[in-house]
Length: 443
Image (cartoon, rainbow, N blue to C red; front, side, top):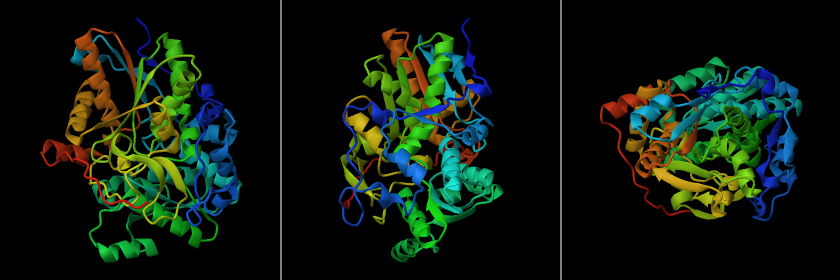
């Protein structure tokens, strides 16, 4: 019997990040300055990012070395296991193999520390004293709080209000690691105050929280901004996931056919599939790469590809991406980390080039898949990750119906131990499916 769980040693963490932009035939169009709306120069980002991260953001180098200080922290939990879901396969009576890369073993319980640690390190060596950020469901906020704790930085987190109340224990984690956390929209920024004046009950969104964090950054000396998804350097740092997965599949003697990840801003999906997408671009292998988003916030499947702001207030550079409009207010679904109006430019471009396929799934079938997975494999998945599980199950059922022994792999980007209130709501019949309703958008 082949290995069911494939582990790598601590000395086998990838030593370099993979930059897919170097292999893409069509390079990304440049971001635009939010004021002039002309192509932004690297120095235009200096007010919010440290120089090393700006260099990574615009780099066309295929491989970028991972500093030893970053590797030393990543080694607290990396490499993460690649596990075959034998019990799920049996429950589905499928000829397909189902594998999952489990990122829930990190200190914060998700993939987010992969980039949080790197960003905290590069800010530290650049002289930053304090980081400001936003978080949706709290995975990113807790990850950056952990990373700032490791490198001695202060951390201020603007947490989307609906998740701030839905997921109180993520706030507890952030406080445990020394961060200050406020619900967004907040009274701490002009952006937040102006939104609350118009709508005191505003549930918040990632776009609003980003605006608040950037305003905080530019009004506090010694502060830089840190983003947990979307940007090129964030996707870059996450490629440790896919690089490990490639090596683990090689050792297991297995070649995946379908690789699946959930998509909010695109970071865990990019980290998981970009090393495989690079092979596909170079003509070395062929894979089906599927990004899964919520039907309530269907950025790739129903959004428009164009330049748009990354935040609600229009303070960030405009990026070429699939977007629902930066003033889109998503419903309060329980996959808070996927409630973002835009998609990473690198992911967006690969969707346009048909290297990557996009799908959307509704909330109730997603939770149904999460329950099936928890009852077969024993791991409680985050609601975000359950989107990938839903499509993995759908593909396994398709393989059964077509009698094709596919190898399906997905990124289980985080555990759901702090999301149990969402499961309680599901079992109580309090969750509902939302249909996307186009709103008037700003250009």
